Image 1 (tube, helix red, strand yellow):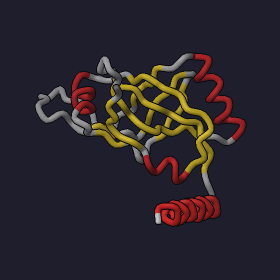
Image 2: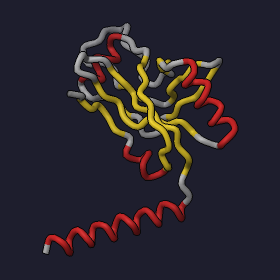
Image 3: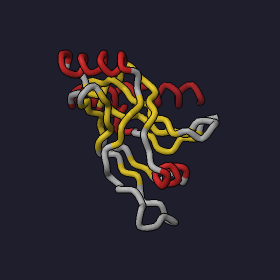
Length: 148
């Protein structure tokens, strides 16, 4: 059973999601303790590739309450643990086809390991967002009509 720490709801509104992937993260001890308390935010974060390595930028993990002066830096870049082939494949799609890589959610596995679900996505235009809102509204009306 997985425990969700945080979900990036904005991602589904702003992007078309093409592929998803599970990635591990290199974390410090106080960071994993804060994650277990649910104190993380990935709304404005993204993944960048540097020297064939993936890093998440803009992810905020709050300082651990019971930490000492060696507590972690809250907004630091964190390395993602991915297969080299996957990194090269996604990196080439980002460079050539105009994709971006965004985080979707952080969760803890049964064994307590923190995982990050990332996605290869393309940005939506304002027209696309309006169209999605219309479709969603129509579905809600249909459900209400069926329940009556």
